[in-house]
Image (cartoon, rainbow, N blue to C red; front, top):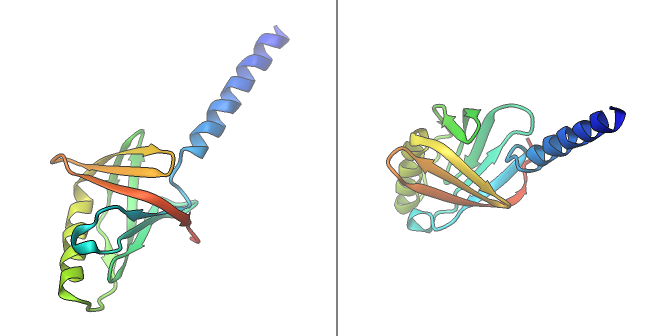
Amino acid sequence: MKKLLSCIFALILTAACSAQENSFKGKEYKMNDAVNKAEITLGFDKTENRFFGKVVNNYFGQYEIDGNTIKFGPAGATMMAGPENLMKAESQYLMTLPNVNAFVLEGQKLTLKTSDGKELIFEEVVEAQK
């Protein structure tokens, strides 16, 4: 009986560690193939369900997660001006973010999927500082 309980405990511990390793919390990503060649970043707080990033302006907000579903709340942002093409890319991205409803995390690749079938693909760049 002790061996059986030890095996069950080991399996649960292994599953918990694997789930934590597959988390995007505390990580920062850069979007692949962003509109107008903008550099779009997306990061996740280590401890709270908060996101942040930068296009021209810094943006931030909260998200909810349940399994592989994710919902981004309204994003706040700084109000700096930039080149028109990058401002358009930023506006389009920030309008798309609330339509994200699912994600897939495969290694260092994070894919956000929208309700209308779009995919935003990000690659991990650094561990987030927040």
